[in-house]
Amino acid sequence: MAIRRVQVGPRMSQAVIHGNTVYLAGQVADRPVPSVGQQTKQILSRIDRLLKAAGSNKAKILSANIWMADIRRFDEMNKVWDAWVPNGNAPARATVEAKLAGPDYLVEIMVTASLD
Image (tube, rainbow, N blue to C red; front, side):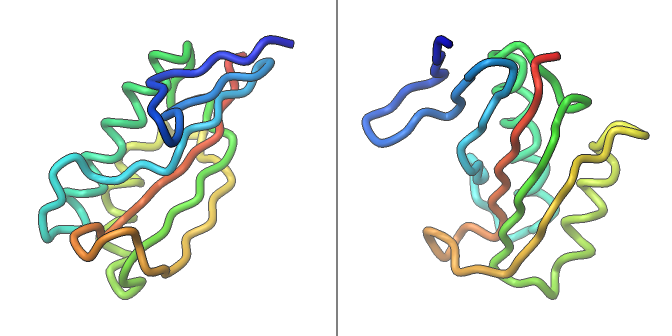
């Protein structure tokens, strides 16, 4: 079974397709502003673009892992997430508090999706 990679860099690929499954790398905001909501919007936009490049879309997301620098801002992230997830197609999901790669990053999201 072939493996296809999207936006390959020296350290990682932004997406890897194997069989009928798309695995996205953890995504962070392009322009980290001090707003969980705005960072979440940026990340979800990146996810939309990567899934499209892989031949999938947000209605086909199987699972999502979300890391937040401050879990007390969970509701702010969820407001944006809930508006983005297609009705009836919410994936399995986990959200945890974690120290992220840099102090400007407030949210990181990684998804796995189907091509079917």
